[in-house]
Image (cartoon, rainbow, N blue to C red; front, top):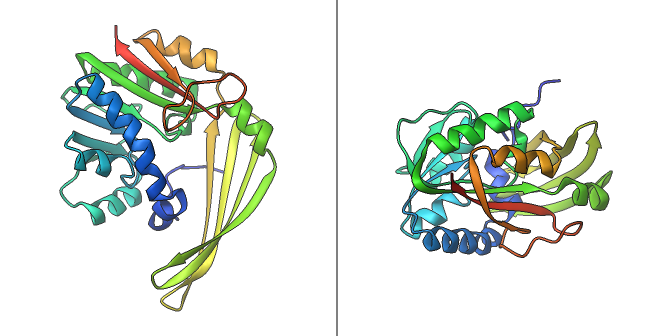
Length: 246
């Protein structure tokens, strides 16, 4: 079964599920890091519906987004039709310009199918950065996630302006993939809602990621959460990297 990892079936509800208000706290850390490195022009890989991009844009950053999902970019345009985005693959993009910073957050990188694609993304990022540019990368720590959540299932209820939706979330490990499934059911304007999503994150040893990163960048700092907390081996659910151009 081919898995596209593009949220095509649930793009309309993505911001609701991920809690847009919570992302304000996450954006504060990213904005602070960009300012510390005097970054003005930014490219976000895997920008999705704009949870980071639009808030960073509101803070004055000249930011563009890139994503493979037409449906997610359509949701972004509903919120800001003037946003600049690129419908393309992060492992093959060629935009013909350079940026002060490139950010790749919310596990977007490991939605790629293999390590070769991940390394190609690092190479593309390096080619699109200015000489003093930085890469901010955020990956899940799958060892921690699997230990805490393998074979888990929960249901959440979400109110809509014109209805509601209940979503069953299921997580489990399958070979070298961490699989999350969403099953959505509800009503909108008295019409039934029903969708299914399956996302597969590539489980990659952290040593492979860091070794590949070091081919193109200098790792300046590691962090352990979306809000920039200190990374703690075996406890942090995120492995974040702030990297400089070599």
